[in-house]
Structure formats: structure tokens, C-alpha cells
Length: 492
Image 1 (cartoon, rainbow, N blue to C red):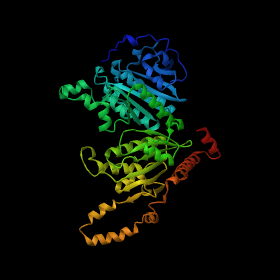
Image 2: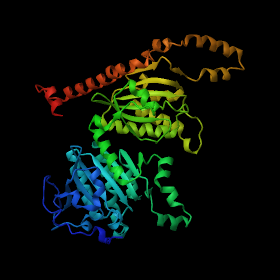
Image 3: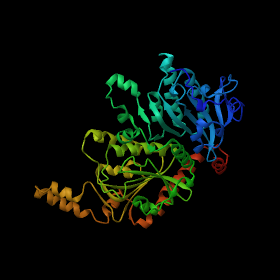
Image 4: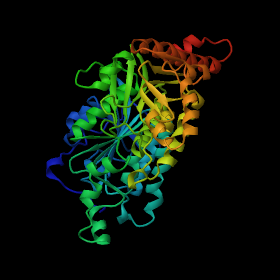
């Protein structure tokens, strides 16, 4: 397990390629940065879809040159992507199965510590059999100390992880620690253990490949954010996500799209969008959006899907996206069209009550501006996904074609069918529930009923202007007395 794997196709000597100290200065006594060019490292070819050619590789100071085996199962490097600096960890499965040994873990922690201090986003391509058991059981603490190191890193910086090939054991945990997690579709397996261990433990019919393949993990769990057919495409996608994280409108596409009813509907609120978590749930779609150069996040129940009943998978996606948007510091818009939460507690929906409470708490505590617009239906407890004001939303609106209520009027009528007394009481109540929703406006639950043509102005005025004002207030509060808040904002 610990022996390097020889492969003649990747055996060139490149002591002259990665040899000269360059650029960044390492503060660690054992490791330093050395310059290299991706074009001279053929086994890193897919990285050209993410990084410019010039990179700086984090290596041991005492290495006279540098070979592939010296990476010990993972390369660590700095590079530039779309004009911005980024940290990269690239597991090399051909060397010790990309496993986490003592020395590798020490170097990875040192790299994370320095990149965290520099405030760099991280892209980690993980292909690993997990902990390097051939180093004995004392390797465990060294390897698993990477978990708190990654947790600390993701508190401060964006982390994008990519699963490729076997991503098992500690590798699977590291993959799950990404804010955004891309899995390559072909021959990628994400699991707590590998195929041989599954077979030895559960027999030859353990079904590892079906259980751990990308398609199953994407369908059955929240481990994977998005799937991409091949590794080069995954790197290109990571580059787009990085560009969006820096606010670049070119990361998005024009919102108008005749073949996509949801995007066509959003023409009324923004200019460009980048859909994230595509295909994760058929009842909720998530976008990073731009009005001009101002950026915000959008949750939208698909216009084209009338079966938008919220389930656990929907709430898992909502929570995942909330965490990403919070890290990016984005204000949020929710376009709601749902008949409610799915009450059926089958195997995949058993925790629906718990998840509604948990996600409700995340909505309440979201630290940036958010507004909701009922675009279609908003019934029952699922309406909390529309950021009601009692959950911290700044404003709540409904389109003039929307339907809002505790339950659909037809269901209420059926429930009261056997009681003339209750039917009479309900008839009195329903008279106050006017089509123009003035009762909700008077109660403060809605701010206004609007037309689709008014949505853009509301987003710009009530969401983006409010967010910009809050950011300015935060900066002014942090600026020392006598300093120029405008200058500080400009510098940042």
C-alpha cells in the first residue's frame, strides 16, 4: 500500500521542472513553494481547465528535485483561475492509492494553514482509498486531524471538492466537507469503505458498485451537489463556480430561455443566472443571479412542475444552498409555488417534520437580506421557504395570480363537509379572505400584491439596495474614527 506505483507513461524525470523556489514564501520549516508549468506535467492535464499554466507546488524543502512519487499521493499547489489565486489539492491515485499517510497529512495541514491565512478558495480533487493502513494504527490521528483542519478552512474560505474514481473512507469525509461537491459520473464511487472490504464483510454480492456509484449517491443522499460526465468537465465547472464566487457576471448566462419555463419567468427579476445543484431535486431549483453587476441567490419552485410538494430532499437542497449563499454573503430571493409539505413519512421522507424545523431555524438565522414572492401557490408550513417576515424576511409579496392559505379551499370544504356548524363558521371566515389578499396586507403578512412587471424594481429596491446599505453600515461600524469608509470599501 505504501509503495509507489510505477507507470511508464507518467515516469518522466522533472527535477528541472519543479525545482526553483518562486513567488510565495512558506512559513513552514519543512516545506516550500516551487514553480512549475502544468503543460510540462502530463498527469495533471485536466487541471488546465481550471488553472493558468504557471503554478507553485508545495514540496519538501530537502528534496533536491521533484518526481511524481515525491508527492506521496497528493499534489498541493497555488495557481490562478480567471485572474484570481486559488489553492488546489490533487490526489494522485497511482501513488499509494492517494491515501492519507503521516507525512502527507502533515504537508496537507501545513498547506491548508498557509492558504487559510492567505484567504484563498480551495479546489480539492479527491481520489483516495482513505487512511494509509500500511503505516499502522498510529497513522489514524495524523490522518483524521485533517477533518478539523478542513472544517476550520471552510469557515473562512470557499471549498469546492471533486470526487474522481474511488473516493472512500477519509476521502469520502473530505469530499463531503466541500461547500460545493462535484462528482465525476464515470467509474466514481463514494463510500465509507472500498469494494474489497465490502466483499470481505458482506460477501461477494455486497453490491458495492451499485451502492456507491455516483448515480446512486446523487439520487439517494445529499453527499453530491452536482454530477459531471468527465474530470476535465468537472474542472471547468469548478472554474465557473469560482468565477461566480468572485461576483463575475460572465459566470452566468442570459436568463431568457424559451426551452426553460422557470428561467423565462425569471426574466422579470434578473439579467443573468448560473444554475447550481442542477437535477438535485425536481421540486426546487437554485440559481446565482445578477441584476447588472449586483449579485444575489434565488430559490425557485419550478414553474413547469405542478407537483412541487416539499419533501426531505427539497429541504436538504435548501439547507445546502443556504450554507453556500451565506458563505458567499449573498442576499436572497425566494419564488414560491408549492402546495405544501409532503406529509407521507416513507423511507426517504421519514424526517420531514424534523427537517422543516431545522431548515426553518437556518432561515431565521440567515445573516443577509432576503425577500419572498409567492409566484403561484403557498399553502401550509412549506410557505416558510418564502422567507416570511416572522422568520426574518425583509419583505413579502404575492403576484396578483397567486393563491395563499393554510390549505386549499377545496380541501377545507371537504374536511368540514359533515358539520353544518363549522361550515357556517368557515363561510364567515372565508368572506374576509379576499382575492386581492387585503386581509394579509392588513395583518402585515404581505407588503403588497404585485404584477410580474413589478418584480424587477422590488428586487433592486427592497433586496439589493437594502443589502448594499447593510454592507455599508457594517463597514462604517468597523472603520476606525477619522478614516474614510469609502476608501476602505474601495480597497476591499
